[in-house]
Image 1: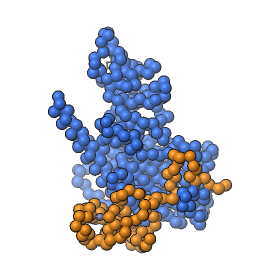
Image 2 (image 1 turned 90 degrees about the vertical axis):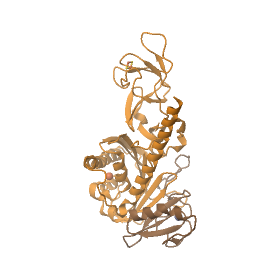
Image 3 (image 1 turned 180 degrees about the horizontal axis):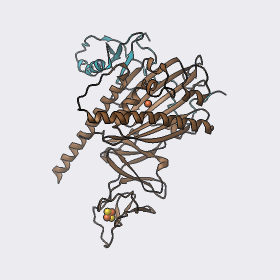
Image 4 (image 1 turned 90 degrees about the horizontal axis):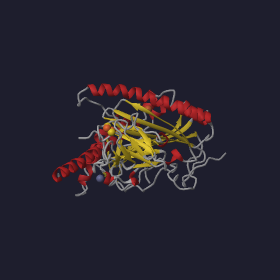
Length: 95
Length: 360
Ligand code: FES
Ligand SMILES: [Fe+2]
Ligand SMILES: [Zn+2]
């Protein structure tokens, strides 16, 4: 996908995940509501206020100052040994 | 309102702490008595005799077979908390029983449910399978913290403090310099904070344990499962080594799973459980000793700082100002989750109390 999702790639896989990245090369933050709308802010307090208020706007579809982006695909960190409970080895290092 | 999220699972102890001796730990202000039956099952019940409130963990109280005998006047209780004998009379009052706690032994921890027992669901307990996996070697400990649990949550959600508070141990300049990505799943109660350093100094903690001498790529991926379990997936590899494969295998990196259980003891004190599991040098006792000593030192650096901070905050009025910046994005999200969980737990309790009042 585009520059809208800087590394590291999305981690949590729930239906309603908020995501905040540090805009590369700046001191600003950009956050995505789980609906795909994003907003840029000076700091985390302002950004969380906006993000958490956002579902209120979902009904009429008007998203204020934000821009619409497609929902990110579900994925998880590739190195995360989440399958340890099973028997198949997750990451054994080569000698 | 309760200062803690109720109707939640909390780590009360390491499994290895609970045996055929009476053991006690205070969780969210409740004194919990823990012991193992002869069959090896963990029993968890109130650590207060129903007769005159004597602590059952206190000598000369003792375990006899699968019964706890109070050391004061001899009230005797089974693993289900039911009183089976009282002194001097044959009839045991029908209502004589200790409150028991839903309890689950998992991933080397003993989890107890604090709240309404009919809401206890074991599938909600977050996992840390590395801690008792044969593919990892784990060192662990627990330090008492004289500070409210929220301060430890703040501390762990923002690892930029490593650069300053833990310089020379796990901190290097790159930690504080590298931007983070934060994700929050409100419904699941999970905060994820990710910091991937492409080219960083290798701090002694990792240099001595892995043997890497040059610069490293260092990934820190935090998963905080509110309220109690904190996981730091730490990936260390020499700069230029290939990354993980799509199937999850990752042959060129060292992995350290740092696990904290953050268990409120009282409003102003916390049990700081820490564990470090590694997937390399599995049999190397020297590496184990080094990681145990080094990590304990780091934890104690946090403890000293947070103990001091607690004194300051406790002495100030509630509205004292803080200033949050970008590094606090994850910490703020965690605070919000905890506030919501605390309110939900208190509401449930309020409703129950009103209901039981109505009934009686
Ligand atoms: S206080 Fe326990 S038997 Fe009296
Ligand atoms: Fe720390
Ligand atoms: Zn939205």
